[in-house]
Image 1 (tube, rainbow, N blue to C red):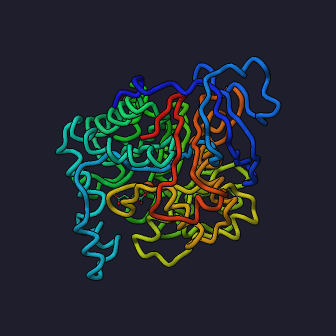
Image 2 (cartoon, rainbow, N blue to C red):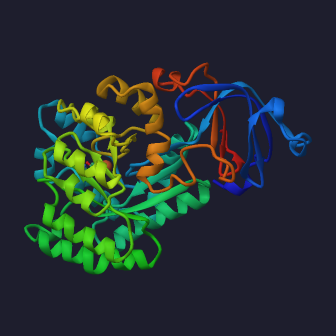
Image 3 (cartoon, rainbow, N blue to C red):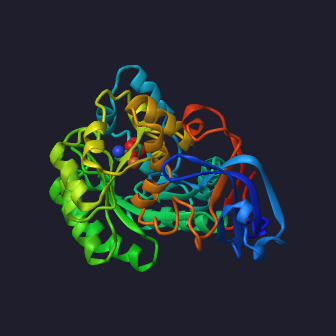
Length: 407
Ligand code: NIG
Ligand code: FE
């Protein structure tokens, strides 16, 4: 993919119905793009004269929104795990499979065996699928290498994807995702390696934008999580957490103490965790794909999050084990249907709040003057249709980083 070969989006995008942050729609709107940035937003009827002669792009009455943001993915990995899908159908559960050498560790084997180019080649079409649905910023985690050279390999692929596809990519180091086989029964030794060697080296190479940990009884303890957070803090990197997915580990409260950008999954989140997240401004990232694929029945505490005013984001959590999903709009539908998010909540959850969960809300997740042009024109009548249809791709046009990226 050569992003720089795509046509520039500079010009007057008119005949739009623009979705506002509260989910309402303004007709007769236009967006002016100059040098790849949003230079004017407003009613076509009062377009300033200096923009009147620009090349025109007729939106044909389509609905315009900010580009979507997918704030939690594990997009770069080797192999796939359809065998575990089959095993779960025969009655095995995620924890049992993980404890018996499958799960994350089986993807670690396949990822270690793959070259950087092979990982790139398998991840690229997955990224393209997200982009084709209007995603303009995406987070991609490491965590299937679990050794310096293999985590580096994954993160280098993440950086290359961002450059080649002209999409904002945030790279999250998830070295503390699972215990690699060579450290069996030596969890402390592995966390020392993560903190003393892997994370400092990868951060120094400019490969890390944030740090995540899987805090869970089949992964890492609260104390181990804190050790990683302290290292991240000393390196000036923001943290996130896979928190309370299978059990309440009190991870969210710890993450909030480190001013985490987000706590993700959170099916078993307590009121204490919610209060701590609210106080710290931490975003709750909901992952209905994993909830669905694991046939989980323990709902995240949506009503309590709503009552506390914790911002909620929604993401694909694309990964080969628990969420082989490549549609953020399907996740939006599932967040409404399974978790009972309202339409305005879910629309904020795949735009503004997702951008907050990545620390990029100053450039993504909403349309503002001066920002790089990232927007989507949809062949839809009203915003609720974004969450209503599933299995469709109602895209009319995509402008990503100032270029026309519609496939
Ligand atoms: O977000 N929960 C931990 N990590 C991933 C699953 C990874 C895997 O099973 O490969 C998740 O669901
Ligand atoms: Fe995840």
